[in-house]
Length: 585
Image (tube, rainbow, N blue to C red; front, side, top):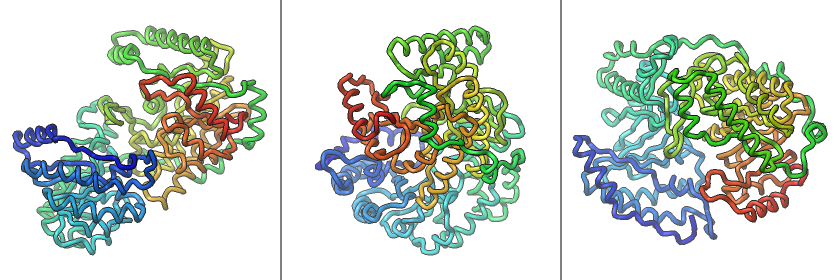
């Protein structure tokens, strides 16, 4: 966002067409739109703009135009989504809520102000004072029942009581009791709506399609269709009181395998790396013999349509495993050769064999369930198929050793081993609910420790343990973040604790606001931290002044369709040298 920016809502023709289609299908239309506060919060300030909220008057005018259009088309409710309300909002932003919703409520249908991903405890009192017709809140995370004592008598409360962020079935009896108490606490009567905690875009569509999942797990699963059924079942329970006794049978008993007992106390039994960074760095310089400013890539090369099709054919049994393996070997040979020809100093094998950086590891460790149709939206048009962690996680067999060793034999240059880190595996999976994320992450870390140790002992001198989800998993409430970051660093330390100090451990952190995880990057037992920098014009580097470990700033923005010029990349390297000492870059 820049100073003086204007917002044009357009003619809204697309919106009118979609509303008319919904009416034609016989639906009572509740439209949804991202709220103006959150829209501004998610942006960045450019060209002299120092305070994004100063743009709110113009943005609100554009919203009023859209809301008026919806009102004219017969829309009865508009769900205005402000997930920022679940954060610890600065006073300036929280205070802006009043003026914004005063303006929006004057010329619109009934507004359902919606927050999700956590109960908005920090600003719930403010939300209750706004001139809206209803509030939707998550009652699954960070919920305080006592907050409802002062809930307005003229507002609807939409209770997000079926968790839209995991795939486990709802305990209908316990949830109905919670909603009963909420209804009594706020004296809601018929002003209570039952809903999912958030959009169902985070879960797959239908658990009934997963016939290959074992019967020990399948009854516990609840995807989008099942969650909609749970919402309907809760409505019946609340409408008919004790008539819900039969409904309770819809909640299958949990049958997670018992825990193996690996928890925080076992960190003391699994040592961190034995030498500090300075001592390790000296040994690694001697062992690796890298030049000044060594070059590398973060690891994965494009998954071409050809290899996606080969994997489909292999699953169908249309080609033999030997043919598939031969194609992978040939592609790795090509990738290694081209990197060497281009003058790269540290090579990667391209991860051609991996359809997904998390599912690949889930397929090879015990405790994971892999679905056939469990696709969810990642971002934009991209989808992922997260594995499900249903039981204790343990090492079964080497996961990356074969291909890393094969690629290493193709060159005399250093070859990076590539492993997805424990925090990312847990954050990008559907984790079990009977254990904390910390316990599950430490189980994954212990399994990865064996993998990383095997890579190091086989002669792989550089191993990258990717943690792109480190920032993504950060709790919304700041008071909970220190504990999360501490165990994320501990899990990383467990994963690499079995390696020689001569083995250089890299990590790759992207999609992140580095300021939130800077101390954790220092606490992790990594020797080199690769960060996404080119997209932000190298601005993240300013945070790394004085950082005492190796830094690998990205100078080629791989997400951009426009390749950077040599001059642009040289300028970025020069900027990095102004902050990071050459021996650490």
